[in-house]
Amino acid sequence: MRSVSHALAILRLLAGTSPLSLSEIGRLVELSPSSCLNLLKTLVEEGVVERDPRGKRYGLAPAWAASGALRDGAAQMLADRARPLMAQFAQSFDAAVGLWKMVSRERTGLIARAESDAGMRLHLADAQRQPLGGGAVGRALAAAQGIDGAELRRRFAPVRWQADLSFETYAGQVREAGRKGFAVDQGFAHRGVCTVAAGLAGAGAGFCVSASVLAVSRSAAEVEALGAELLRLGAALTPGR
Image (cartoon, rainbow, N blue to C red; front, top):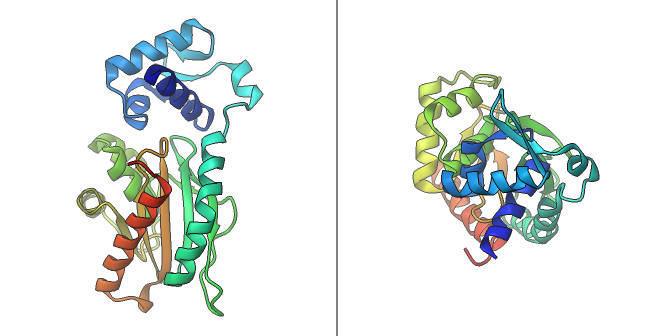
């Protein structure tokens, strides 16, 4: 039964992203290379998945991709479960809260949001997308996925930061996110905005929750506390982990 569950996880991943390599798929669905390869071979033989021999990447076969049967199912269920908890969090901490999904090798997309009812508040635009390496979300996903230096540099390269940020500093921030469980962006992605983000374990590949506040409104200790609370929110969104 676990192999069926893992196969469905692979199909849902491929339904929501551009073609991925064996190593990327294995990392995102938390499978060993050998187990992942065996499942992919079976899916290819059954005509559900196709392999591009030139790029050595796997994607859904056209008929399956066109059906939309697998697309966003897991994301929609997670978003439905998350919205009331996100709304409570936004109100309690006066923050703009977002639920993000890795939608390709280049981008993440916002799939749910919540905000407080304060007169002056931050707002996340519906269905926005951002570079995969950008912001606290990019750092948190990189840390949660345990990517190597080459992949981290690939994700960092196209991002346009609003404040100077070297790759070495960025890589250090990703390592720190790996230790703490959450990442922080202090005005690099959006000037004057502090965002905290945490990857969701066990919710499927490439999900992340974020909370954004005005940078001047929170002390360093309060930002750390916000990160700890965001981890609790992430745990509530992924019961059983």
